[in-house]
Amino acid sequence: MTLSSAVDGVPIRDVDRETVGQREALLTLMDISKTYRSRKGSEDDAVLAVSDVSFTLAKGEVVALLGTSGCGKSTVLKMVAGLMRPTAGTIRLGDEEIVRPSRRIGIMFQQPTLLPWRTILDNILIQPEIRQGRRAALRHRSKAKELIALTGLSGFENALPSQLSGGMAQRAALCRMLVSEPELLLLDEPFGALDEFTREQMNVEFQRICAERDAAAIVVTHSIQEAVFLADRVLVMTPRPGKVAKSVDIDLPRPRKPEIMTGSAFNSYVAEIHSTLFDRQVHA
View 1 (spheres, rainbow, N blue to C red):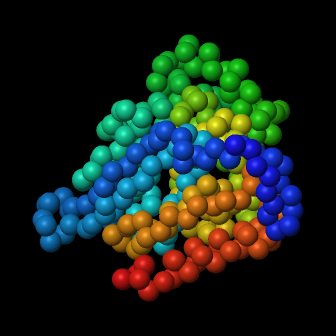
View 2 (tube, rainbow, N blue to C red; view 1 turned 60 degrees about the vertical axis):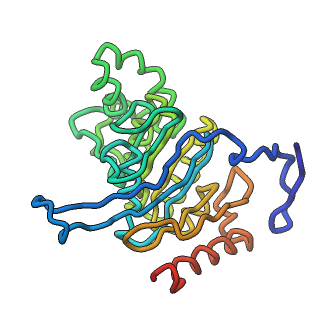
């Protein structure tokens, strides 16, 4: 069904109101828990980092995980990536249980970690090269160049990482994640080390790329404003052991521009999430 709407008095063009919630789940987490133990394996040294986390993610949906440091956001992301196994519960990508890293999943961390001796193009191609060999990686060159153009890096294909600004290096890391066309994107504080202006630009860029690719993504962040700007849904986590205290659906029009952050609707979501984070019940 197609409807017209308005936010803060500004008309929104007619949009298809089929929600991501009506789509088939791409990712499913069922009662995920993670306990860290010392090398001795003593029960006394066990730390419950994440407890009974469950949620689904639809194709094309962006979910933000938000919470204080040490609440288990990154642990959840690593379990979804297949970098570590949950102590309890299951994680499924479609019909496949995630037990190891998968080509269907791309991940991006706070630091771009580009190899300093490789050009930007060769850095972007490193994942298909490792997985399939140098010849196979060459078949991804045209896709890599498309992504370079898409992220505004044209002309820097043969540059070294030392010749790029922080924001440009993060764009290259974003290209590296996308070149193998993963179904699910995982981002762990990807723009946290950037200045505010560059971070804002990267948020707009990431939103645009997700929309063009209809990509599903989980973004870990400490910033309430960034979570509301990027996400269709914000999951607010409690301090350790991390649990989902509240799920907040973000009903704001896309594409979102930085100006939306001054609107009453945007700031209403920020206030709601802020209240949840600092509510005594969340910290109980």
